[in-house]
Image (tube, rainbow, N blue to C red):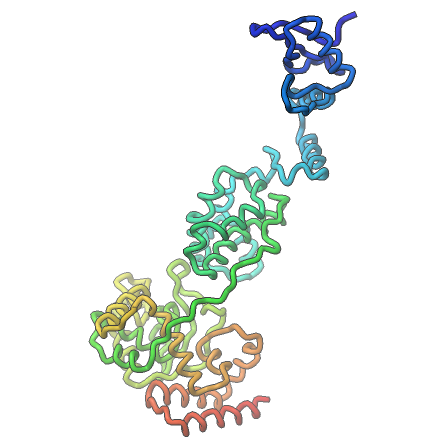
Length: 445
């Protein structure tokens, strides 16, 4: 009768054995730790009878390995498995909590993460964006370009080499404690996190991964650093100064008087210029061109401006050599002036008047200046939000509709003229305006 094992002597003088498994195959070579054949064979028979083999013979480690496991491992090494078999093995290991995730090579989740992310934020190729646009949801090229840039800067270097199905919550949350995150503002960190959680959520619901990497992630506090607001004295000094670029100065003056965003100013055409007033209908984006305003709605309420500022804007529009009608035109026919120029020459002007820290002020600071000055007069911020195009309070949707009322428009115009044209700040005027506001509130109610 054939022995249930093979035994041989190695060049070291120790005997090695291969145990015959139930399916007829042989285990890997295993040292008996014996130089005497009889002792070696007794050791092998002991293994066979008990069904356990020491992981290391003559070792302090008493760990043993069963013959059944050896056979299982042999089968895994040599057997042919189809997709269903592989998925069954993974499922069993996951059910027994031995495995958190695994990605079969032939599965949809085996796409390299770098390829998936680059495609996901590509405005012209992304299946996610096609879904959004197909359902009439707004998403702009500039937004996608920003997230693509952050993907390439922060996520691809960290995750390259993995596939979509391998990415876990730990991969996402590890960014919070990274050196890069410590140097960024909380709002920026949260945006970078969304750059990965949005695509991973889409992947989860499209069966590209079984890992939920998006729900329940605790983000950074959104408490932003207090913004520096230009005071009226500094604003007046800036406007009294001769700037290196007249167009940039007029753009800054317009932002100061109206709270308009840079993109809204870039998009202005001669058709948006009324009699001493501005209509904000569009916004300009580097990637999208002309588009709707940030909150998705045009501000149909005319924003009053001084006659002097009106003449400056009219003059710029008349100087435009192209047919596009942009008030702030550029040397490229189909594009307005670059908004970076607005900020560039503002910084120069701040330096020229001796402003201590020009880094804390940017073109967008005029928007905060406008809202702050308006709130000095109008205690109900809903009016200010409606005029400036802010849309962060739920009731604004209802309230802004009443701005079509002629009385409300006249009130708004009076306030802005008092602040930016007449510059009358006496307490009696402020009380009068707020009393008028209370009367209007009662009429609207």
